[in-house]
Image (tube, rainbow, N blue to C red; front, side, top):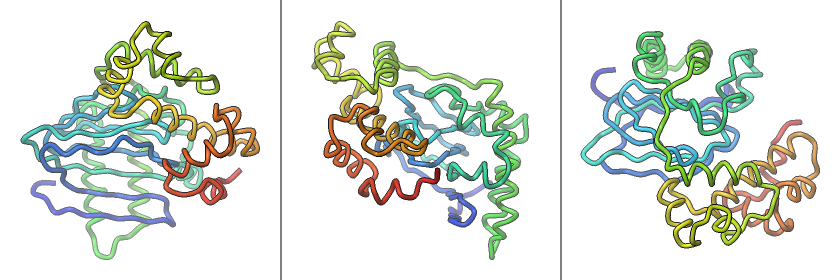
Length: 278
């Protein structure tokens, strides 16, 4: 993939989006969760930091980053860098529809905020980088043959899952932030106030907010809202009523859930949740 000529391929029918693009120096994305999507990011050149669940991962060329639908994340391009990258986003049901759920452990069985990176050495030696090259070549053809692209994506996922099971490189996360995140995710159904969290970790409320925002790029209250919305979607998809799901996820009432959901998902819950298959 020498030189650069960006490209994009999106297929709702096949359930994937492929982007090959460049981020300029010192750009920073907004912390977010990709609802109902699994993302595979490969850096081709440059250097950036990927912040996932408060953990800072220093990404270098040929590193591959895996991000599941419930992981809060954002990226920061290093000063003076220009990052050439590939981003593949898949609908979660891609694995089921294409009979490849046997190698979806990296999506559904990986612990949140861990095992997100397959290092460059492994990517190259295992042939994953070569698969990316073939995939990029097929996407650039005119017209794009979507069945062929889908087949290469399946081959890519198979190899990514095999390598992710072996464990990748970790990242840096401040101890306080890691402990706070773990506590929040283990107690989403409970009352979680800034005062309670500050007391729990023997911090002032001001320092708690400062260290969490610095480590994750998002406020504690917004992080809690994100995770509770994801939990409501999960409970609802398993058959709970919307009111039951809201209560179990820690929302005080439906109006609080409605405001949080609409703000995070950019659409009202009834419209979005009606798309979830049971």
